[in-house]
Image (cartoon, rainbow, N blue to C red; front, top):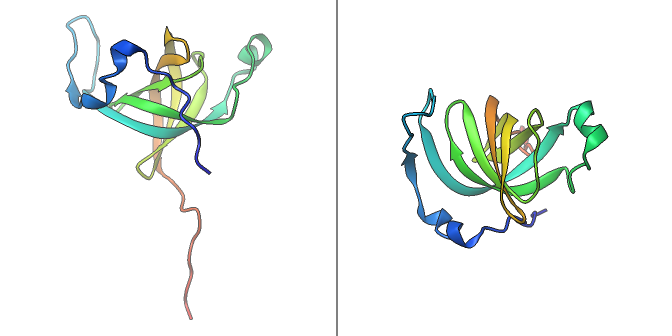
Length: 137
């Protein structure tokens, strides 16, 4: 099943897919690892929404959505998504055969249906094969 990409990039981000390579940092940033611009679609699945947030927010429109990966480092991931994510929400992104488990740290509204999320990477694992073939005959 293919998920529809619901992120609406504003006009000033139309060159989004043209940027690539390592992203420069500013002197006031306290980064421990370099960020690499990825610029790819990926599947995101929400895996944990803290109870305190469930009481005060609407649940997400769908547990699985398509997002745009903005950048990736050893310890963090930046994504663009069509709806707001709150800090402490956990999700996993399926990208190039890997599952990236992350916790949202910040979310900023860029435009209608376009939110920039910064998250801490908790774990990276191999994505399971959808169907295993076992031909021992």
